[in-house]
Image (tube, rainbow, N blue to C red; front, side, top):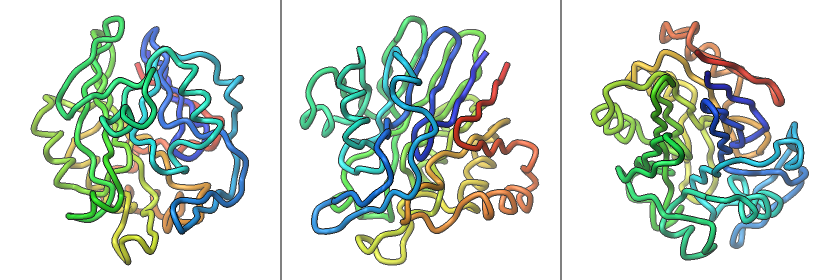
Length: 250
């Protein structure tokens, strides 16, 4: 059994059999969060506190350099975790317990195979602006194969992942069509129609979107995700959770 509980923003508790994993910990209150000379505005706090989430076996951290993916309370949570899988850049900046997981490299966590996969946090050529980001694929006997996209805006990256893995049963897609002046009118994460197309490319049987609300720089959300998946003929695969809700998959 696999269960996903939506905490808020990019943060979800994934109970993958007996293994507990948390994506991009963010537990801070609403407010303005500086990033360089700019700021990101958080509009809604998490549905669960770090204490209510409890201990996990590992944190899956797509990247550490943006406060909407790792905030102050989330950083404290990650530093107390036994393991954080993330980018080489995050390892350099944070140190232990972060372990860098390169693209296509796998880590065995008690019988769960966690593979790092590419992610592109913006348009082509923007990595020097946005920094390094990673996604993850989870595999284990008797469990669905799960793709966690991280902040990815590239369907070409999704195609690479579809080519590498025989199947993706469950896609956890960071959506929201995020935009900031950093890359002009380009998207930093998948817009709603891009998320639906990613699900089609992967032939994912189930889709749980994350990171599509609770920050002012998201341009799309539940009101665009539902029609986008319906137009793609994938409405029955979409699980659009409210904060604090969970969904289970056999």
